[in-house]
Image (tube, rainbow, N blue to C red):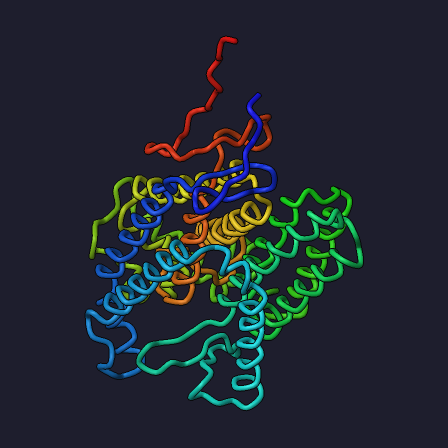
Length: 432
């Protein structure tokens, strides 16, 4: 077998003992992301005027014009594309180097939100609704949700931390690995789940952390104990929050909601919207539930509106697009020989899949409502921007995959062919 050579200059990068040359990225990641974004923009154009009328009637104002939500979504989409390109172009080494700073910025932003919103009640800085302060007010630019910054910071920092501990052979060490991990997890849960009262975002944050933990190869007994502790903590957080208890109780009531119709209003109308769509939907601009019947029609409940608009066939296509995007991420984790890279992509997978699964499951009534967005489709800038940025980082890392699974014996040869799939190179036999 030909010995593996080390890279020199700008030809390639050394990944452990293997040379992986920079090659064409996985453009399917960008394709599936772009299709989902475009679909979300079309739906926002269709239901935006209806949503504007609902808000104008509710608040007795003419502030929201028919194009308000479409313009805001277009702006968010543009910023998300900028974030995707930036993270796809800026060398991943820079992100890795500044991971701790990004995490500190996320934590500091959440702490500042607590100070301005929960303590000082500065409505000009913090935007609070339904007893929860989750956003900064940016004037005409909209709002900023610091929990999304924290999620990205946790992703890049913990990937580097786990990779370093694995390289040191300390991945199973309680004091040097498990305690710091639990500290970051507890601090993040404190800000997001307890103070900001955002269980949905908290669950997606836990998904990022837990899936990266599993990918490190840590002992199964340790993983089981940590998952058990997280589940117990989640139960406690539900029990101490009346609105979460109410949602869980509504979920277990199912369709028999004779005494809890108010609490089941959103999920009832979500099911009506999906059912009304039939096989092919009622068509763009013909949604009835978007006229004010279904709460959060352009945010958390957009999947139900998509079902009403495009029907069962349309929802199937949307789920397949998400599934294809997630499968590309899984494929990446199996072909990246560097631990840090694998953990980053695994974390992005956990981030995206948690949002998709929780949102869709809640809309069809198989999981309690959590108030979580449907990635790339729901109205809202911060979530779209940071998810697109995370996908941009995964897109960049797809340039450094090897041919075949890293779990199979191979020589990690160059994948720099024009098709993106390199051929195994064999030394020519020479006669003596």
